Length: 157
Image (cartoon, rainbow, N blue to C red; front, side, top):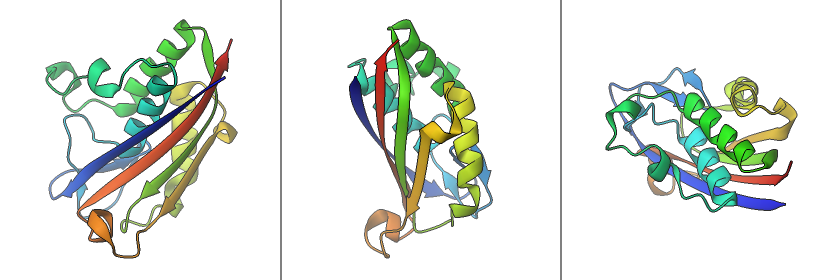
């Protein structure tokens, strides 16, 4: 068995969609990034890649490559899941935490779990998503950005 950890952060800006966990969240601001800037999916991909010491998403999907401009992060996550399988492993489980003062994410967590499970080829019960605030502290507390942590466990096929 192997364990991986991922972390990602994106700035909140006007004029962008707020896509988290593959779900378009209604909010006055969105996440800035080369792809769809899905902070949760990016943290998950980094945890999976890290579990096998395969680098990070910047190595596999560089922001200097126009093919990934505006990319759907769930599609990229499916590629990472396939890479895990090609290396002889499967995903046991994923545990995540989203850190955001706003928007309120609890109404969307079940849909996020289903979308992530589908993209990664696992069951929704294998994907845990929690959301928390930082009580107004730091860049997430001031609503300047959103962060996410992810931990995964993988095992040999």
